[in-house]
Image (cartoon, rainbow, N blue to C red; front, side, top):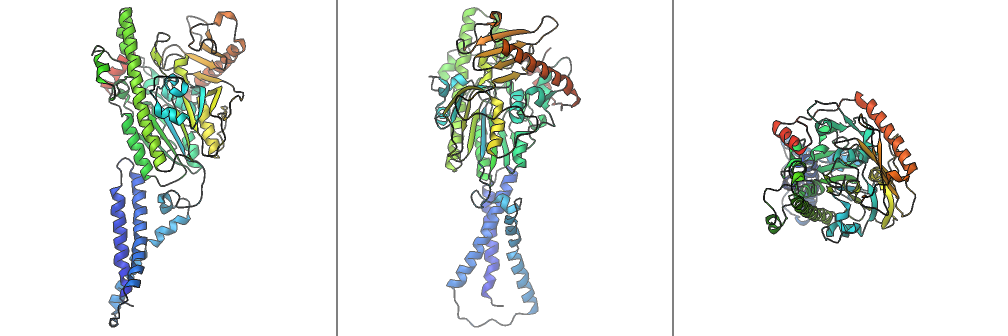
Length: 556
C-alpha cells in the first residue's frame, strides 16, 4: 500500500478534532442538548474538510521518491485499522438520510431540502396593556419597536383574553379551550388560595406545543413566570423548556425575577444553536408585571416620589387605599409612570430579539405573533394590577401577527376576536388539524368578517365572574352566591370604551346576557365535574408564603 494515502488518517483526525474544539467553543450551558448537536455537526464537517485536504495535498505533492519497502503484515493491519477509524464517520453521515437521524438533527438551516412550513415564534409580554402601544393609539412613544413590528403585521384592534391572569389565559391559548376545560384546581388548605400553588394544566388537555412537536416541529420555550413552570404541566410538548424562575412564586413579589435582557440573551443562544427547521419558539417576558422596577427608570423619576412607596398590589390595598385623597392621586400617578417605564424596557428587549431574527434570516418567512396574556388595572374601577376583574383594562390585550412572506392579510382587523384563537391559527399555518372538541375559530385575516366575540372566565381571586365581549357590548356576570343572585354589568363598547356607565338596568344586550349565562353555567358544570384529576402540588417555602400573604394571594 503506498505511503502517501496514509495522510488520510492524521488529516481526517485533525479535522474532526478542530471541528470538536470549534463546536465546544460555541456551546451553551443553557441549552446542553442543542450544544451537543452543534458540536457533532462541527466534528462531521471537520472530518470532511480533513478528507478534502488530504486529496489536495496528494495532488500538490507528487514525490518521485523510491517506492517504500514492502510493509510487514503487522504494519498492513495497523494501516487498515487506522483507515477504518478515519473513515468511521461515514456511518454518522448516513444518518442524514433519515428524518430523525443524529446528523440530520444537527444539520444547519437550509442544508437539507424538505419541510417548507413556516417557523413559528410566539413572543408574549406579561401584563402589557394594549393602550400603551402606539399601534393602539398611545402617543407616549413607549413602544417604538412594537410599533415598527405592527406596521408589518396584522393589528387586531379588539382582542380579549380568556382570563385576567397568566396560567388561565395561556391555558386557553395553548388548548383552544376555556379555562374551565384546560386548567385544574385541587382543593387546598383553608389558609391558601388554591390558584397560587395548586393550579396546573389538565394532563389530558392537548397542547399547541405537543401538536406542533408531533407534526415535526422543533419546540422550545424561554420563559420567566412561575405560573408557567414545567411542574404545572407547561413542559409538555417541548423539546427544550427553560423557565428562569422555576416554581419560585416569590419572584412575583420582588424585582429578583429574570429581566427582559436575560430572557432575550437566552433566546438568542437557542437561536444560535438550533439546527432544525421548522421550529416553534415561545419567549415570555415577565416585564412589565408588578412590582414596577425597570432598571432603565430615570433616577430623577424615582427621586420625585417617597422612597418607601412600592408598586405592588398589597401596598395599595393595605396602605394607600386609606391614605388622603391627594396622596392617593399622587401614588396612582407614580404607579402609572413606573409601569410605563417597564413597558418601555420590555419594548427595548423585544426589539433586540426581533433584530436577531432578522440578522439570522429567520424573520421574513416566519409567522411571528406578539401578544400579552392580560392587561393591567390602573385604578380605573378602584382596583390595581390584575386578576380580580373583567374590565377592559385587564381583558383587552395587544395581538399582532406577522404572517409568512406572501400570505395575504389586512393590516388591521377591527372586529372582536378571542386571544385563544391564536392557537388554531398557528396550527392551521403548520398544516396541523385542531384537536377534538375545540370550539374556538382561527383568527380572521381580513377586516369585517363576522365573529363570535370572546368569552372570559376564572378570575385569580375574589368573587367568581365571567364576561362576554362583542363588538357592541361588554357583559360581565357575577355568579350567584349565598348572599345574592347573579348580577350583570353591561357596557356599550362604542359609546363607553372605558366602561364607566353600567347599562344593566336599561334592558339592553338581552341576548348577550342570556348567552353569557348559558356559557357560564356550562363552565361551572365542567369545573364541578373536573375534580377527578389530581393537580400537582407546588411547594412554597416560608418566605414565599409570607410574601404571598402580604400581596393578597394567600389568606391569613
